[in-house]
Length: 125
Image (cartoon, rainbow, N blue to C red; front, side, top):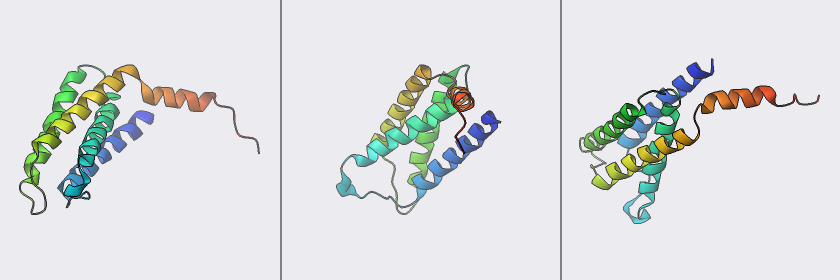
């Protein structure tokens, strides 16, 4: 059950990433490099999430997520309010690396969450 839920939420994360990336930008140019932190964090979470499901050959997952980020950057060039940005693509790729590394440090995270929930004492009523 947990794997199914994890997978559904992962696909929602992909759709959310795509939609938010093609909408008019929420941060304006005066925000400095705050958007790069958003890119880095978003792709780190996305990669970490999927790395919990893709156990073998995670490098293929990492390449797929980097290509996904690059494709979104190219698609932004087709929207009226966005434009491709090489620094965004680099931040996306840095997030992929970060998410991959964290996934190596926290393997089997969904199972650990499930096991922890079942070992916690029941609340008193």
